[in-house]
Image: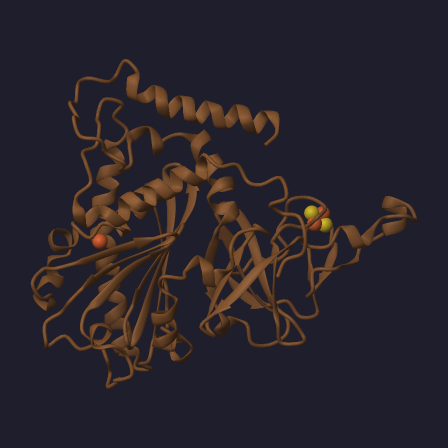
Length: 394
Ligand code: FES
Ligand SMILES: [Fe+2]
């Protein structure tokens, strides 16, 4: 960590620590300790900036799927925290990832969420061009602009790690040192492999909306199994015993709800455990992905942080049905569920502006949320390694 990073970190920690003992303390009595999100963690720009480095710099983030990566030159763009990234299908069938930044100035080299670049990416600003493999191919008027010795090989697009999961889902990671994707999601991996997500197809549209909330408020909500029966009352009729089994380990969490006999999402599948056919999982893959897997579909909701009080939610559904009307019903249903959450969360967000308020303790069914808040704080307190971005990517 360099001196300015150290000062920033100490400033953030001091601010968070001082908040408990500062002059606004005392109006709200909170005798029980709480690891849940506190006001000073949602409005700090310094903390947000540090999260972009220490949380998103070392995490696997879901970007899209292979349905957009079929022919050479096909690409998808996305964000890892506030960093733009680009994933490109190569001529040999493999897939490579890069920072979506021209090496000359900070322009992107691809702008659509998905598309095909042809033979190369040409930056729109001064027309430097890059091959599908990221190599800098040409600089217009190179001799006149830079003389004879410009080190072309040092100015290719910056490569990042990519993992294609389950023959379908594209994840990427900036860190060269973070664990493999399989280790990242180890507690979920065997069941996710059994779903055969590669057989699912992306539904005909996605949901994409930006909300005035901090990304961690949404993470807390996504990992809260306690609110479900109150905020999403529509769903109660399919549930059995109003029970939830809460699990968390490492970078993943899982809340399992058994369902009544009439609830059947299996679409005739019998190749999964009975629990997985009857019941539903609400899960989380650190730092910003909420997957809800079923025997016949997979719902994915990603929270992309934009600013301390601004977060974009992108949701897709993948499933076995090709019936557009059925897809549309599921999408409308998801829209409704998301709205129930974001309406609630934006109320919380507004009230967390208060410097006087202190949140209460977590319940048993908020164990996943508590775990994730702790994980985020642990990462924020841990600088990236000096060689975090050194060495080859796998
Ligand atoms: S910013 Fe890309 S060529 Fe100048
Ligand atoms: Fe919810």
